[in-house]
Image (cartoon, rainbow, N blue to C red; front, side, top):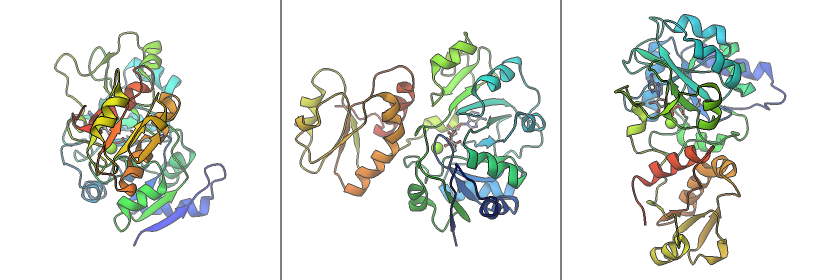
Length: 330
Ligand code: TXA
Ligand code: MG
């Protein structure tokens, strides 16, 4: 039985939160909102509890999890040592959507890190997430709360669609703010490497780490999660960009198709279901996964998406939408 608890992030009801915290401290699963997407959490120090996450999501065993903390001090027992950059990055980006990879201590069960010597750690800014961590008294291992391969959940309804009967508690704390996941930065390699573009932009990172590189240069381990097809709606998705994207979409689509429209007049499309992605990359990000799930509900046969420009959060959106497309382009 899954209990759904509604929590107002602006006015947190501690008694209700304690029910959720108890699920975590007793080795259960609790889905909770963060500023990026919803997470599916378990006590990161309880191996049996963490195994339940992989089962609930159908997640491949070789894809490690992010450990969420509620203060910088909680990081020290979990890692071997903290590099200088870590402190500077914490000051600028925590709480917030930056995940940092450090060498893990023996306290982190290997299952959390899928057997790697490293651990990914993040301090979220969402008050419900930090309250859950504090009240449970545990660091919380949490991937996005979707079934593996599906678009990440940005509302409690999405989580209910994927996790009803699987999680012990689902906290409904309203819509996630950024709509794309955290930026994953590997601090165990030199220079530090961004393994997943996310809500903290490359430009923001460069202001603190001028030598940061994108991708895993110098033979460093890639983020294992990035190799799988991800964020996939039910219908096949095709990317259309550049000159005459509208014309190409109209030639490939039919009545039952969906279009995620950006930088174009929605009335130009002949397909039945046209959803506007927003006026800029930030709006595109905030509604991207919501819109992909909307196309599922509408039962479209194909989806055509015009991606946002590169730069800022646009990199993260492009990364997600190209993965949703699994290489399909027109
Ligand atoms: O915004 C977010 O990061 C959300 C919220 C819930 O915090 N979480 C999230 O988790 O997106 P997940 O599991 O869906 O994505 C975590 C990514 C995966 O690509 C995984 O492979 C990578 O982080 N990762 C985790 N630990 C790693 C490690 N030790 N080394 C390299 N990559 C790691
Ligand atoms: Mg995920």
